[in-house]
Amino acid sequence: MEARRQASSASMRRGRFTRRAALRGGLGLAAIAVLSGVATPLAAQQSTPDSTIEQFYLGVATYQYDDAYALLGSELQAKQSLDAFIKGYADTAYVQVAITGHAASAGQQDVGVTITSWHNDGSIHAYSGTYTLNQVSGGWKIAAASITESARPQNVAPLMRFADLDVTLGQPDAGMGHRYYHLLVTNNAQWAVTAAGVPHLKLLNASGGVVMDSSPGQLQPITAVALQPGQTADAQFEWSNWCESAPTYPLKLQIAIPGDTHELLIPFTTPMGQVQAPPCMGNASPAVFQSQAFQAAEQQ
Image (cartoon, rainbow, N blue to C red; front, side):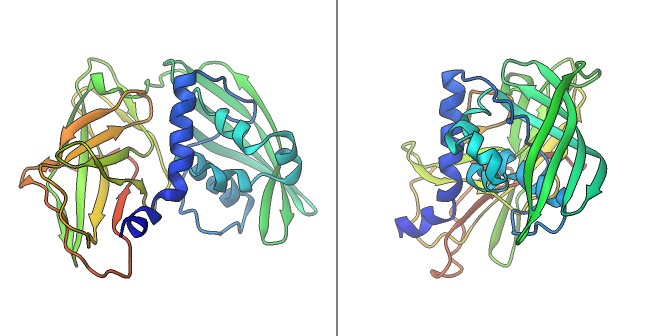
């Protein structure tokens, strides 16, 4: 049972924990490591240069570094090991990219981008330039990058931190045995903040033991949300198909968000009361504990 439960998130945890350890170590930003933030499902759909770049950004944004690294061409991989690639993101909290143009030649395409990068020290940086992709068997690979830093972006809010926020759980949803929850963050600061990326959740039992560790769900493109004072963002997450013995109650959630190197512990309690384990829908499939990106909250 234990192996089955862990299988759904083991592939992403290596990257996530390595990145958090690197944050504590204060490692610098590598030259190639200015990417993260735009997300589409990480299926093997390298049909265009744009979708390859988006998959690369999704891998970084959701800490699936092995997948992101695999989208680099052999020459870039020869210049930078996977470990160096991961460490290169130690100072990067979140990055948002926009594609600005294209130039094509036989078997190759240049993709223009502008990038806004939030760092863990609270600074905000802007970059622009071009990525060159080569067409290979099965899709496209990032062959080269020419990125330079530009003037600091104006009117860009800092990433939210827990000290800025009121964090609650909204009304849950259910259907066909699935259980969906809403992590709501409301800006209590006197200034605007940015809600961005995918929260990482740990489900803890009554004694603090880890019941499950979240993995990213099937993400739509990630867009940072500017929260004015009093506004709320929502990150939906799912906990479904629990076929093991019931954990000890009450449950708690340990939450990590891009922009804050600290974590927050809250009761796993919604307006309907303390959350209980969801029903088992079949032993053949692992339990699901997946989180989505922050989006502007709908009016309740």
